[in-house]
Image (cartoon, rainbow, N blue to C red; front, top):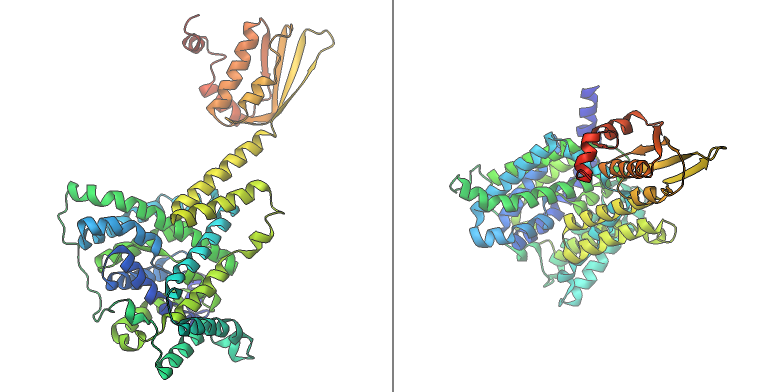
Length: 497
């Protein structure tokens, strides 16, 4: 069974994976160079990283078909480190980033993705779609009309080529776009920007090396403040991308395994002279849309990337940027969840606010981690507020008028305690108060403290209080933290008065 599963992951879609991997490799080159420039390092640092990370995650990653490489989100976090301490410290920070991510995998932190709501994921996807499009604007600013014509032609090929019978479905249209536009640019000798204009491509294979820095506490103090956010952002983007690819392919993935794979990939990248990276939503979507499904597409993309930049650099450098801009615009359009705009009025207001807030924060700050944090925080607050409304208290008095029973229904936690306390009449002259908790559940010490306050207030008024119907979980937390039946604890609370 395991052998069949492995065979399916690697050889279940060979033709589609090879073609998709080719498109991805071509798309990775300008991105890796651009991200290297953002980080302030030589283009080969980003290209070597993309090769290593793609290959390692293909071999041991938890999400077949997902593309990982050098990314803008990670590059932005490296700028200050490179500027102040240089490349060697960046390589050390990359290795430490990988170690932290491996530890996160072994501590099963990938399971925390279950706390990220659908609205946050949608906001994250929409923000990435916008950022991918915005990243193409420099290539469309202050350029000749030829660039616009080539970009429009590229988009035409991408969207119209699949409509051609037989061949349209068998060859990925982004690959056709790149090949056709490169041929046109060379034939017409167009003076437009090419991949070669972005920076010199490496002419040697990467070699194994350790960073040339002292291994001591001073070094750790320098790189740790960079490695921690790099690890967090890298895992966050990788796990969110894995979730998105899960949806696109209607399959599941092992998030904790993905954490470990991203970590080992970054350790390898740092030792091969590369920068830290993570999963890429844009390239992952290109891969899936081009027919890539298995691990072979990711492995092939990484290996082909290295072969092309080292041995075919003269040809690769002539690919017009307009062709790749067209591909990335297609990615941004395909990434953005257009249905989320249509559903704004239909969805609950809280869900729409969470989605929009996530988009605004990510686009405004270009910080994916911050945007997701804000989205998760808002979603949690809305959820807590909604659940608190389902807590209420009913009461009735016995025929003699000397006893009242309060029935608590719902979830008791920090946000519902005020409503809980306000539901009791402490001034009513009754001899006995029964608090029925059959349909209530106590979640935290705030709710236990509120119950203590109610019981002690009634006793202070001279009433006998009886609690009935506690479930085992609630009884456990009340026995541990409650004070209403512990005279010695009550003394501490009221200060002996």
